[in-house]
Every structure is written in structure tokens, then in C-alpha cells.
Length: 171
Image 1 (cartoon, rainbow, N blue to C red):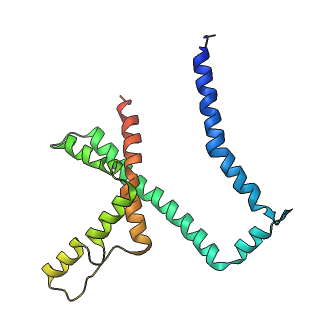
Image 2: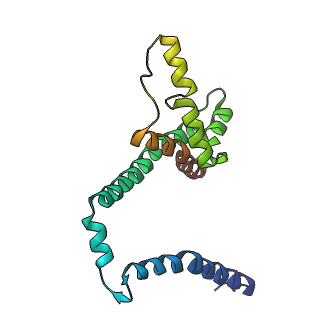
Image 3: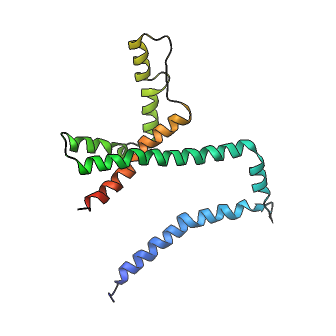
């Protein structure tokens, strides 16, 4: 059996301790406090939450947006990885670099950029309105579809990068 250095063991226990302290402890604290109702243990907080229709709707929307964001990111990122890793075409390296560009932008900057481009008063929206001679804009970035669009753009590079890394190891 291979001898493990003491410094490696100390590093692993340090990382484990950090994860327990910064991830597990806060989550357990919130879970325990959710059962605490004025010093007594009860399910009153959960009954109140699940009896409120607006809170249930918010929970449902959050789950749907999360699932939709993951699916759309996969639908965009995985094919991009296959295209850029399995085929040769002109400007492949430039386009591959552009595909991972969202990693450089903080999410808030991405949202503001999309609003300036595709919002109701966005550059692209108003330009199309002017070029087509329309009285009002035909589309704008708002609602659930806007959230899914921005999430998919912002997060698809995770799929792209991980699948690309996997494809580079394949014969």
C-alpha cells in the first residue's frame, strides 16, 4: 500500500473541516431552526408555508426555472462541445473561445447587457422597430422566458467546458 504523506492528510482534513463548517453547518442550522417555533419543536412553519398559495407558486416557479435552466444549458452546451471538438472548420478556435466568453462576465453584468440589448427599450428591439417601421415593439426580454434565456446563456459554458474536457480524452 502506498504511504500517504502527513501534509496531504492534514490538507485533506483541513478541506473537509472547511466544507463542514461553511456548507453543512449553515444548512443544518437553518433546518433545525425551521422546526423551532418559539422554543417548541413543531411543524407550524411548514404548515404555514404549504398553506400559502403565493409561497407555493414561488416554490413551483423556482423549481421550474431551475430545471428549465439546466435543460436549456445542456441543450446549448453539449452540442457546442461536440461541434468544436469533433469537427474542423475555419475560425474554429475563435468561435470556441467565444463560446466560453460568458465565464468572464459576472451574472449581473450579463443580465444588464441583455436588458440593454433585448429589453423593451433595448438597442436591438428599438432598431428592429425602426427598420421595420413598426409602431410598437414586437418583442422584449421579460418574464420567465427572459430568465431562462439569460440563465441558459450564462450557464451553458459549464456544460461546454466539462464535455469538451471529456471529449479531449476520447480517442
